[in-house]
Image (tube, rainbow, N blue to C red; front, top):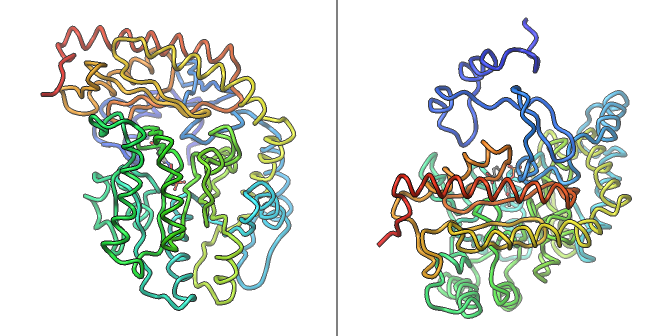
Length: 465
Ligand code: PXG
């Protein structure tokens, strides 16, 4: 068998990739024609590709490499754990030290009432767990009709059948028979695009009150839970108006609806606190975690469950679990990641150093002619591209055209910034330095300038009527 290494010529790797590898969320034929960018190594906030480019990773991989690349401590812990106990399951009344230590550590870091962890291999799996757990919880409580989970349009909760149904991405629902029954979606608190003439405060309140309307329409006895990201990530870093979350919490409390905070992106420092729920001031019954839990060095996710919900679930056999629930290597690596986050005071770095520099840089982009708003919470930010700032206009061109062109200019300038339709988003490693933030800002501005010039030339700076 030929050894597949980073040292094969790029074209050869691309040809093999095109012949055998089906990429997620990709039109593979298009990619095959173009050739994938091959990433070979990474250190700190920089990636290197097979052509030798040094690319500043403004997305921390997929919103996950919170402690940055190249931390060999995690590799060493993984190697040690693989030699000692590479695998054992947590079914059938067994456990092992890494998963025990990790669960205890997560309980210590989570808000006081969340002390129990059900592990999964990813955020999608964890949200599948949540669907079953909240429905089973209500069944145990003698209210089996409470099975509807309310979520939001343009939410992202994963890509499995269950979690993809929870998500509010219509292009996903169009493929493969989603959503599953008893999932209901309400509108998102996206003021810039959907707020019209309302003030952000009024709009935030109105969007939260859609939850109350949905509960009253379907019946309190039918609704199990509301799930949401504290700040929508994959939907385009949508920061809700400050009126939104307090009203959601009031409604969940009033009607006895469990609140699930999907912390897969927001968790582990991304918003400047350990969890996004703290940043937006909510008290969830369950938090979904993944990504930053291991800084992406190992695939691991889970649900952090309140004492109250765990008490009910623990009273019965929960017929659910994954081969890799609490995988010892993933658990040991996650634990080491949490040690680094704490011992190196990375949250202090975020609050005192990285956030001020990043916010200043990001807000500085708002004067660019292509930028409608530049919004940021903690270390996740977005900008809305627009042909006309004052009216918050959309482009006449297909949604995503401007975003795609800007992303391509970012790539060309050795910066990874993702686009979600016509929003550009960033979520850099938390350890980024002010100097690196400056470089990021300069590359972003150059990319915006180039995209603007290109759009002008192609006559694309026209607003939709
Ligand atoms: N919840 C949230 C809030 C997420 O952002 C998941 C659940 C699912 O996690 P897994 O580990 O199953 O992928 C996610 C994942 C993007 C992008 O392009 C975002 C995610 C995944 C893939 C791509 O922004 N988020």
